[in-house]
Each structure stands twice: as C-alpha cells, then as structure tokens.
Length: 360
Image (cartoon, rainbow, N blue to C red; front, side, top):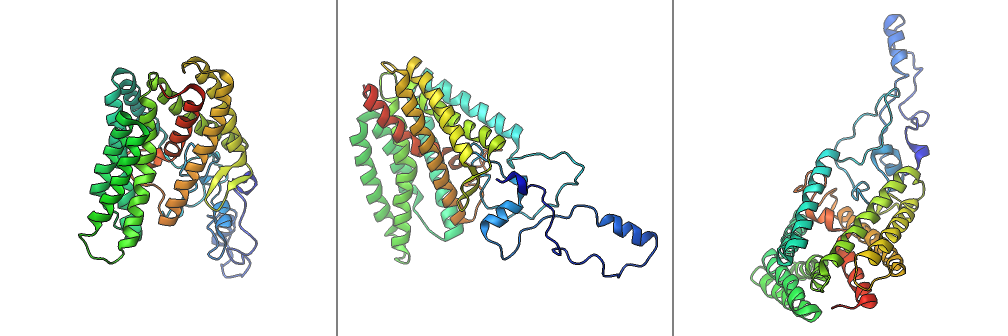
C-alpha cells in the first residue's frame, strides 16, 4: 500500500463547489465555513478500477500475508475518515486480542498433541480438514450455487489423511482416487443440472484441502516426524510474520494488486529473509542429519509457496466476493483462512525433507 496515498485530500471539486453562496451570512455561515475545513470521508470512485479503490481505502490494508485477508473485498458500509487531529493508526481490520488468544490456544493444542501422542495430532489434522471442507463447500453453495457433495468429501478426506500416515504416499493417492469416484457417484443421486460443475468443484475441494494436508501426515510418519512437522509450522508462521513486519514498515510496491492489494514486494522479501534464517536454525538443531545450508533452501521454498498459497485463496475469495471463508475463529476468520499458506507448503516441505534427509 502506497503510504503517500494515506490521508490524501479529496480531488478538487469532488464534493462540489464550496462558494455557491447558498448559506446566509452570520454565525451560521461562519460555522458552515469552519465545517468545510473538516476532513470529509473518502469513498471510492464508482467508475475507478480496483487499484484506485484499494488505494483510496488507505490504512485499512497492511502489507504482508500474516493478516492474509487484509486485501479481500469488504462489503461493509464505508466508515467516515478519522479527524486529522487523531493519531493515525495502521490496522489489519482484526480483533488483535481475540486473534492472539485464539492463536495461543491453537498452538498449545497442536504442540501438546504433536509431542505427547502422534495419533492425537493426526486427529487434529483430520478435524481441520473436515471443517475446512465444510467451510469451502458452504461458501461455494452460498455464493455460486455450486453443490459440491460434502459427505463423500469429508469421509474421503479423513480416509486420505489417515491412509497417508499409515500407508505412505501410495495410500494417499488411492484414497484420493476413491474420493473422486465417490463424489461422481454421490452427485448422481440428484438432478443432472450442473452435474459437471458440481463434481468438478468437489474434486478440486478434495485435492485442495485433504490431499495437500496428507503431506503433513507423511511428515508425521517419519521417525523424527514431530520435529519435521514443527519445522514446517515454524517456517510458515515465521514467513508470514516476516512478510507482515517488513511489509507493514517498509511496504510501498504492491506484489499482486489485482489479487491482494495489501501485499508488497518488500513484504515478500521479509518473508524470504525470515524464513531462510529460521530454516537454517531448524534444520541444524531439530532435524536428524540436517545441516544449516539445507535450511536456507528450505526457508526460501517455504516463503515462496506460502505466499503463493495465500494469493491462491485470495483469488478464490475475490471470485466468491467474500472477506473470510468462515467465522469459527475470532480474530482469524475460518479454518480455511488459517490453512491457506499451510496447505500448499506441506508438500514442498515434505519433498525437500525427503531429498535432504530421507523419509525414514
């Protein structure tokens, strides 16, 4: 977001001429003249393109994909601009206290299940997959009238994740194939209208949520699986944090203005630097037979994949015309709003780990 556009005055004549002579002279006229010096709310031009509208919204958006929905469309009524004397604040549009509380709670559950008993953590992944599928299919039905069948997706997604943990990549592929077949058959019980559209969306959902999540189960199955999963989570979070911190402070050049106007190139650079540093530390000290230079490459790959995953879901939400996939997590949105960077990053981390230190 261009800092130079924040708090910019309206264009000349935008609010109409101020010297039409319609107000009577006297105290009321003086009060009206004084009122003209007050800042007026800035609203987007009805005919402007998306970049102009996003720029006019000013501080409502922040660079960096940590608060990944800052560039999504917001259909809420425009609020008047704050008085010029008020302290300027940059806000991600989230309840920060709720976001921190929910984040800490989720982190505690994940870490406890991950290091106490692996199957419990696998259950957490399965629950996240099923809830994510429910959010995605619900939004598709509400916004696009696409009826992707949830029941075969949920059952197949859970089976896919467990099969990956128990039988490896082969089991995950077999479960994916049967899930796609189940979607095709299940949808046959309804009218043939929009059959192709619905089953295509169902197969997409099966790949996007449970199949990509299966790579977390594949990492978990290794001897040092808990540490591999922890490294995966740390690098993704650090990448998002680095992008947010650097983009918030230095971001001026938009990364993908048509998709997510709040993200900047400076934020992407911050993601890369933070993730590479964290990757070097994690590979050196957490992963068996790992060395620091491998972590540099791993961190670079994570920063790129996490950002692409973030932009991918931003594209989906723009197409659907929504800001969040759900409202289950206060201050965060829905489960899918927290999985957007994690899902595409999981296969990248799994593959690089296997290449560097093996899958045992």
